[in-house]
View 1 (tube, rainbow, N blue to C red):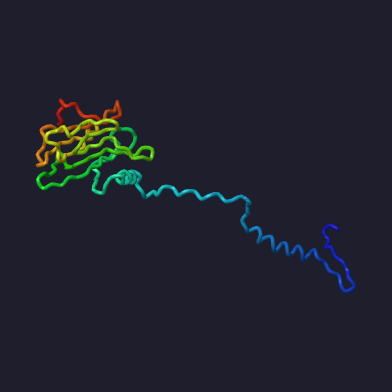
View 2 (tube, rainbow, N blue to C red):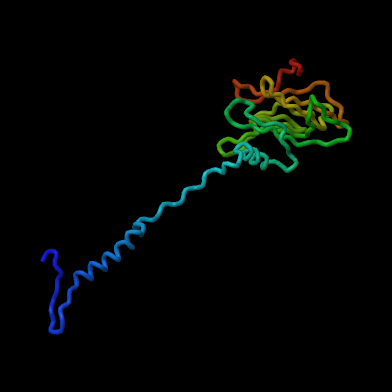
Length: 203
């Protein structure tokens, strides 16, 4: 019975079902074809949004570093000073006094300074200077408790011309400078900050 409608007869009349059945299928199939295929597997999780192209990653890193310090801390300089491929921040805590003013040679008057960087999702301190001491990881370079008189503040400059260096000029409690300044530089061979030779004068 190929190509023919299947019919049956009753005493009342003959009915054919093939044509109405095909018509119904033709009306139904286009609607089904527009539906997306379904799957029994769960849909994949949405991808995490990529970094905002409008956010400066260096500025964001500096914000994270500065967030570990108090609000009074400021940035004196930043960059890859020790050439290790990581960004460093020279952060200082300012000291305000009416009797001592900064100058073009030493533009910052401070009580503390730190060189910090973010490494492996942690903020580390490469060198720390306070009125009590100068420290590097695992070592104290200078103990100011032995100084007479102990410093009341420092003048600071960041020298980036040759080797990255912090130049510190200690000030006494009256704002008068000590006769000898201190230089802290990055030793690229030993991978640590060190003091300049005491016999080497700062320019």
